[in-house]
Length: 471
Image (cartoon, rainbow, N blue to C red; front, side):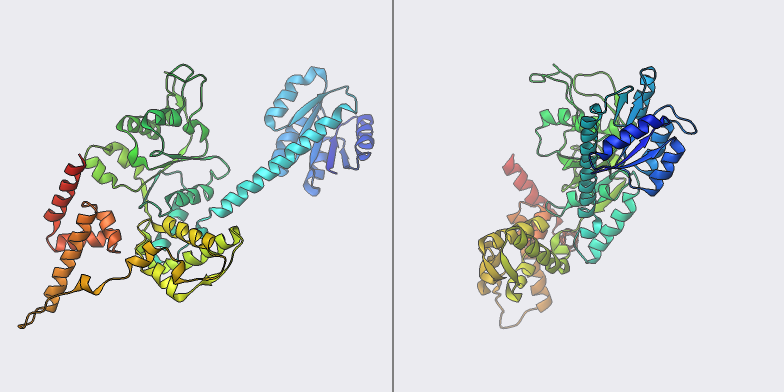
């Protein structure tokens, strides 16, 4: 049963349609002109309106346009004579779903009504799904109460309402895509598409076609003209993940899109305009890539309009208990397990681990634990051995010889610290991000220590040695 409004200045048509539709248990409202219909629309929830185009006071075309504003959920079907087909097409452009030409058989309207009401239901379901997505990716749902995360929330809130390009920086697993989704779904473009492209996951020779589309016959296997991701994101947002892996050739085309909002599909000489907001992300240091000639400087500055740095998990330890609670609840419910929390001993192990894979590694670890466990609290024995083993420091690893004459405690600590830093750098081939993760330090803290202790030359040498062995 639906609420149906009939708008026609001919009383005989109104009466016939009303009687016919009521026989299907629909609730029917009638109006003799557009103004009367507007009054009914403002006071009653109307599912579908049958609208005549030629009426006094307010014609059908103007009514449909007003209807789109005051009652956007209402589906309109136009009633028109043969001489006003052009007006019917205009009405459909204005938002009408279909049109019927007069005269028509009452039975003809049945299937059109069913299809139109199904269309309305589908439209409602799509809107509900969009609202769920918007709620899921509200920035309040990015878990963390630490100061570094509060700064991230503040930036998301500010940049969401703009159309500025945002560069999201952070190690793998920190949640860069989640931040991009939060920005989009809190922005004025939230009703439009969010298109995600992982630049590292698509081979270089295919990425250009993936981004900009291609024309039929432009290369072997191009059997049809295909729309690219930028065209699909028109009026919405495109998120370019791992932008640091993009080839310099594609960087030139991306720069043009940023500057002119135009691009050419592969195999075409015709420019295509696009209205799209660009969000980009990388775990790499783009400034270093610029110095090495692997990333265009002009593109870097175009992308780096508003940078958002996502802190690694080891840099916000106070958030780990919150994340543990969230993931345990989520996966216990998902896998129908009677998990009653986590013991203090098990939680301490998770707090003491360095989490080089960040939040993603923590989430995957807890899902694995819950899948393998049936019920009760998560205990120390449930934690993977790799994570348990990291925190068990053996006494012989820290043994220090103390001579009879004694030693300087401060100097001994400094020497031991030097040794730890150099061993971490040696183990990671000079990679300071990974070395910081091994030592459970922020990268900036490690870099400062390297400089302060005069270990810069040694660190660079280790990195060069590792690169030469790779080459």
